[in-house]
Image (cartoon, rainbow, N blue to C red; front, side, top):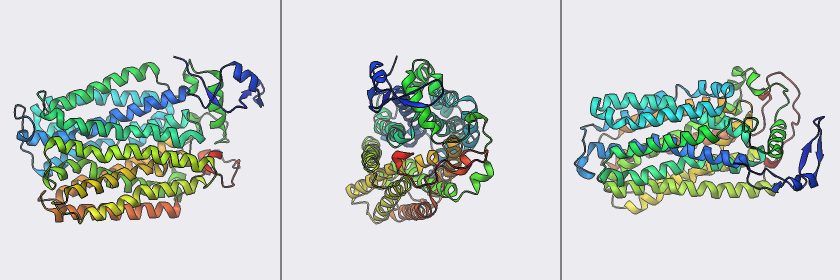
Length: 493
């Protein structure tokens, strides 16, 4: 499989001395197409499906647990478990107990051994564990399921640090908003597919165990594809054209001044945690995770117990907000691309604008949702769709901001923020379990939505005040003068 590199019409070649020279005719002779598809787009496609698999496997239990605890609502021919609401919340949060542990170490491992290895090992093992879920539930009930989910979390802790490391290595700075959004859209795609089909699978003749068999099996298939065609960097991909590899490497070189290989750079831990821009990024990521995972883990129960939806419509309606998020992420990406091409706003303004759309519009929708009665189920679905759909703007906000601050340590930064952020993912479902003692009580759900809205408000407020989008001085630990300290629009990064 060979892809043609994309470049601009005045394609650039590199002579033996390393100087850049224009060589348009030679580029055209090699078949270099303007903004054509390249290997980096194929890698982005693989990253997209990696996140599709990861999210399908982590959210499958959200719908499956409804069928596992209420067989009459799905297929009574399969086992039913008598788990209380607090027990279910405990099971749903257990994934994140392991997930937070491997976040920071996996960022370091991805830098040392390559993002391909860490991502491949993590998702392939997690896929096998998914296949074992029905067996573990039968052998040891909820305790063994909890243990299994902890192990799955340990495996998936490598996903985002690895993906960020891979995007930093493969995607030129000016293409990151679009290709980064394309990769991270896999989050929603996996969520949509799993939530939309889980209810149908649970009520079918193959029952709720098929939810885990299918998601695990697809993960195993992806692992084979990624083993064959994935790569940690352009230098490791043998069939990439010389032109595309040089184009990517020159674009990467513009972000750093250190001549050392990335894997040899000393990690400036103290600088990370004394940087206001990075601390604001941690807060924004944490705020997003609180609201996102509160809704993701609890929407099926809210649909069933408050809105009175059966498991089939429950699953489809639960998927609707994430379908909206999937679509809106591309809409926001297109808007950002146009603003970038026209040099309308700087990178930092773009990050704060889209992060505000991604957190404050959902905040307003959550406040409205808190006052929707059980009889207004259609309005509740609309507000839930707005809440989750507009959250897709965050891909162009805090999510890509890790690479803005430090291309060299993007995976480690993502590991740190995802570790802290996913502590929120542990606390949020547990808090819902303590607040919602009567799952049919609208007043108790109102408190849950108010808390999420308040956290959105504070998290984005701090990101607006302290957030930055320029490469930080600690990106190149051997202290050297910055190449360019002037504000730049996104297309110049």
